[in-house]
Length: 350
Image 1 (cartoon, rainbow, N blue to C red):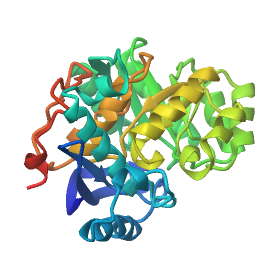
Image 2: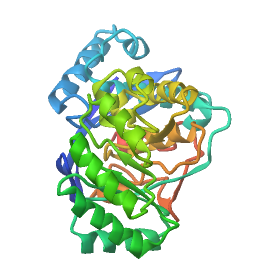
Image 3: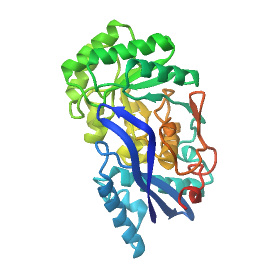
Image 4: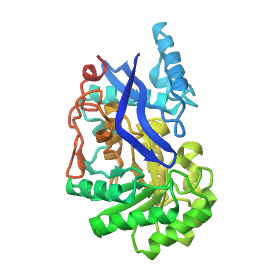
């Protein structure tokens, strides 16, 4: 097992209710399994995953075992080695899955499911900006082919956020799906105000994502009962056992970040449980580099359903670790059809 540290800057800071994201730092991991080398990525995001330092320590422990001949990456995924380090686990899980798919000479999505999607619709992500800038960004996204927009909300008064959404709806028309993501910024009263405002304006949101703090499942369930707008959970899936989010009837949609959940295998496990409960799943990145983005794309392609996923984040980066084999075209991403992730390990791990 080999580990390499990296850092990538965003073109401009992404403003969210939880603060601005300006730079992403993490680790690439290469493992040899089944006669092939697979690559994974750990790009921790505090609030969703462990810290960068804790991620480094978790990977260093396995790398030290590898140096002495005692490492077993696949066993480490199940033995609790990454109990408090989902980003580190994600890197190893993805690298193992990539290696095994390469050994089978199949794209990772096809190795995960016998009938995967070959391309997926994706949403554009718009930061929390003033109404004029938000409308300009929305119009540009729609002009480039997106038919689903996700707007960050929660950093300002909810009536102002609702006004931003109204301005976007008026600009892009009724056929573009709009999502709002509050990043757990509100209390029940504030979320109620926001939902009342958008529903009075008949904005028809695709969903409102994580309006309340992560542990307030009862509050999210109450919002579902009181309002027509679907509720999605994101941060709750990292902070609480995923089964609780499903059992509590707190969500219409689960927003699954492979990095935060600990790997594509865990995304698929959670998606199967959600599907049995009638809850839909959307896969998103944590503003990752090329390896983790491709992993999320393959994981999403292996799942049923036709909702737009939150995978179109490459354009937020100022530079990446390698050329992207799955650029967004017309609001969709095509799944690479080469073995594994569809990227040359040497291109990202040199």
